[in-house]
Image (cartoon, rainbow, N blue to C red; front, side, top):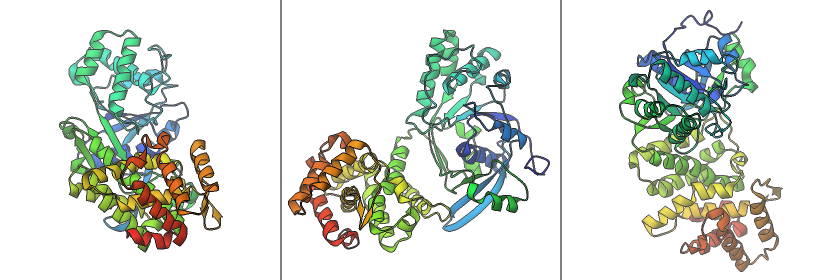
Length: 482
């Protein structure tokens, strides 16, 4: 017996207001869950038509289950470990545009369609010069969307009130702007009338957005247990953490049509999303990257163990609150709330996040996620941030490739691995030898985009911490920065 509207007695049918490119775990646990919540708690009164952006989509499974699936939310909620699940009833149907292209275009003729969401991976928002208007369908997602919008323009004779709100979720910077520029490029390539480009600009709203939620997806390891608990089969069970955030850069009036706030959702409509993107990269990603070498060398294996550990947990906490937050420009209260949520997420007892899975390309990650905080801290405070410097020293020690007698499986670009291999193999055991390692690493401009030895005191500070780690071990060395 499989989940469908006969089994789910609370099934409701809503007008189709949303076109969604992508049917994967993330969009179902993020967008479709939010639409479901707005239907139940804010009278959004809308459903989602799902289009797979590639041939190998799941729409057949979706249609077999009448668009229904169970979402398990697992993680920390209001300070407690909570595991809960719901049937999501926001998807009306899926259309495979590779087999039902005309059906796909017919959706453009529905006056109620108002929102377009997508998550076609970072590689999805690309221009394919081989796409043509007459293709059924076009190869690229922007090509498919251009054809859809052109059909809508023609069907409603360019009426201004039939434009749509486009909010992509792909994790690329300025995603909405990039998508719009590609659509305008297709309009030019396909020699579509100028009125269409004008309608695109005047009647449609393209928003940039930032999404944040960890979605492990289908629980293959525990599906038998889940099926037993549900009492029926569900081929589309989805698992997500509790935390969610959607930052949408766009006009305030969208709130009236997308009443996320009335449903208690963590959706922010802002004039400029840059500070939020910076906040996520610096706090969430920065905390991850700075804790990995320290926690792993200390003998820990997972992020959860790290944040729960008496010493490392305090180290991570102080790094975030004392050295990263002071370098950011959003209201302090908001930053502290976000940081608290991040550390709760790190402690999620339902997610095993291995430190070594985050350790991939740690050098470039430190440059993107932690170096900006280090530099900004120096600019604002006139001194070096001790814990970020210690993390950098631990990173250099980590790239020695040893944890006690155990080998560390380093994963990075070949030039980085060769640099460290040469430096550690030629290390003579002296203080001068350590300083040579540190100054050579800090001068590696290919990674840092600058010579870090130019930051006053950094070379000596990192050398001092590295020396302590080498002589005393990480457990004693960390005491100096705590």
